[in-house]
Length: 116
Length: 112
Image (cartoon, rainbow over all chains, first blue to last red; front, side, top):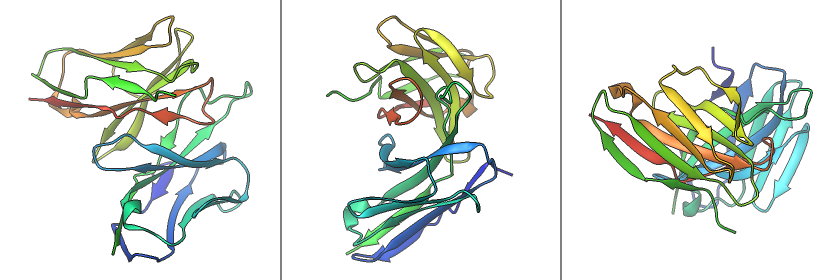
């Protein structure tokens, strides 16, 4: 079983829809949670990161973390065709020194298409 | 502020050869991590360097190695290339840990 599970989709929605992307994880030591967006033939772009349970909002994006359920979500409001990309969740464990020494554990990524 | 720069963008190598990839982190960032991305396995952590020292390593064979220079630029080397090494190799830079890691565009390696 993978430490981080993410439904690969693909997910296709009409422009303007609310998109919900989700990941579950098994390692309760994960403390930092990130969402990346990756366009074809590009590197991942950091969208949001959070370390606490609850919601964090940034423009049209809301990241949600539920540590008790080991579940994280990314919501995209008013989705646009330019949001079409692969969305990756990522997590890290921090040691007593306060750093995970660069290791992110990724989900498989969800392919999202927003059609006009 | 310049982003993470990886060179070259594309490489084609023959089985058995070796290859060196380069990563220049964001100015001021001292941590550089390397990842391999394939359709089947997704993004997998290779190793991380901080102040010229490897602090963490993933589950890859010893054919994969790296180093970091005093200016924080990093290189990774793959020796005795195998067909299965064909992948997008990504590096990520961060200030010191992993709170915010920024990725480069990657190097697409094809082994034939």
